[in-house]
Length: 111
Length: 116
Image 1 (cartoon, one colour):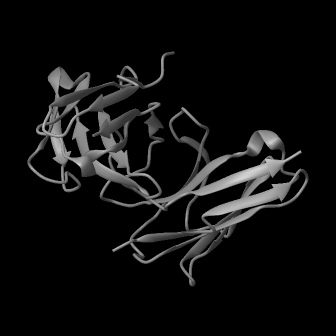
Image 2 (cartoon, rainbow over the protein chains, first blue to last red; image 1 turned 60 degrees about the horizontal axis):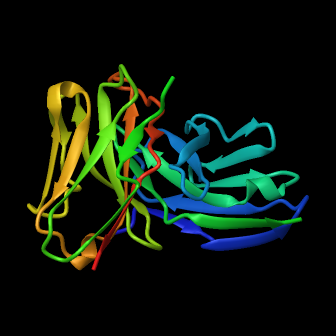
């Protein structure tokens, strides 16, 4: 049973576009919602994260929107650049101390 | 400061052989995690060490997988005997220990295991 559903599986945008990646979770016990960015040959790296007591968090060009009642959260990348091309994973974390990931979204930003 | 390191970066073995993966966490990180990503699927939790003790090994697929963490420092993950379905990328992550709150997990580059 997949606890975190991520979409789309892949996404292609032009430079300057605003890709949006969505995640939905099932268990309300989670209390930390990070996004990880992974470049080829590297491990995932924390990009931005949000706690459920806020509805939005912005860091630079990256924004998380969080809808607690719908159990959904999304990543928006403003003014996307070719260097943002990577695989993005949403994840959830709870009191069991482990991360549960979505399947990942392969983002390609064309010049 | 050095990040999480993993060895080897790639391993190609035949079905039935044994492989041992190694992870060196960031110094001072008591939490150590192993995850695996099978192609096209999510990154799945395998197990969690706190220092040298196994805190949670609920994600270990079966008893062909054995993880150890010697003296609370580096960790090894042994697969014996390897099966085709064990192919994937094995990630190690480490974090500081602070019960009750999230501490960023830092991931290594992974070991890509191919079982033929």
